[in-house]
Length: 429
Ligand code: GDP
Ligand code: IMO
Ligand code: MG
Image (tube, rainbow, N blue to C red; front, side, top):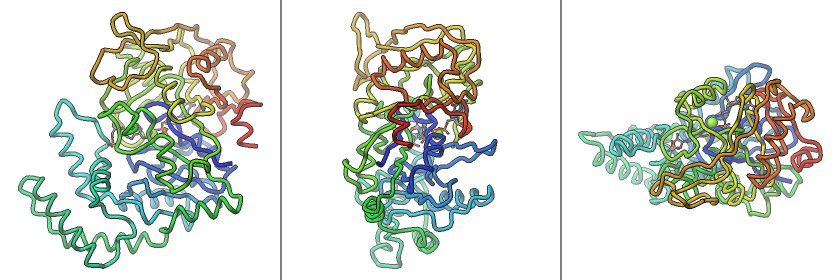
């Protein structure tokens, strides 16, 4: 059965760790959206790997890592990542397949991203400045350049000339020449060719041969272009529909959905965050959880678990089970709060609002649970967890409306509990 792993919050839930530890049960790992705005961290025996574009299954031999048509690929970032992996002893070799239909991020997309943020001023999104938004804008505007377009043709020359001249009109005093951009693109194309192909066809063939596919989301439900806290979102569908359109697979190819959620909540960049903690508790979570962006190093905003948001992620993605990460970060707290609903004036809000940016403030309603003193850090057995931690998890299951099948108690692969009898354990048997 093929399983999708995706973020149930604002990204950085620990998807990389979860995908890596599940990979031995699969033959292929496939990314379907986003680009190198993602930073997926995997620790193996104390060694740190941060994956941006390449799926988090790459550390396992014999696994084919797939980049779908829904991903936006910056060739320079791709080559850099391949080189960095080589330095860490991981040879990508022929274990990478990039969709010919994937759109490219070009150097001027990065400039346009920065410029657009500067223009927004106070209303900025807080993007990763990787050119993600402008590349998807070109894709939807039907002027994007795809991996399969990187051949010396008049059509490519015309497209690049037109795109560069449009960019020169937007960026003041800019006189970028299209020809060096064109030549660079041809060089990128030649270097990428060994890894490119028809992803939809390859995945179909894999399925027909009984090879299992692990689908890896980037970002998270609340950053989804349609379902997130628009406009403070990324420019792709991080939610489950993106997996079908971004890989060219039918919905029935996806047998299960695992939502990854932190035992608290973080967000990087601007936008609404009702349970954000600005004082000492926020700092405590940031320092203990080492909440600094894996891609940009920016400090992440920290707050309590928001069950309104997770319930929403469960509904729109059809999440079967939650992988609850970073439980150990809560070790030693006297009390832990869970937001179960919001209030606006006298009104109680139980469903995640569409207009969360406009109306408000949405004030969180908290339930306080006792914390625990014995450490959960590194626990590998559910019964090893202090009773208060088990109670916290049980309450999260009730208010989120979904069982927790996997609990992560540290950043290493091994620091994980897979609950016996859970759906996650059946997926991995
Ligand atoms: P992703 O983008 O969803 O893959 O998550 P990131 O890699 O951006 O951020 C998650 C961070 O938490 C990484 O530094 C992980 O190494 C770390 N991490 C993952 N699971 C755990 C856990 O259970 N406990 C602790 N302490 N750290 C974790
Ligand atoms: P992973 O896959 C957390 C956020 C940015 C910004 C918004 C838009 O590691 O979970 P963009 O550059 O995509 O146009 O930025 O989305 N963002 C992420 N936040 N984790 C990510 O990826 C993110 N990718 C983008 O901070 O608020
Ligand atoms: Mg991340």
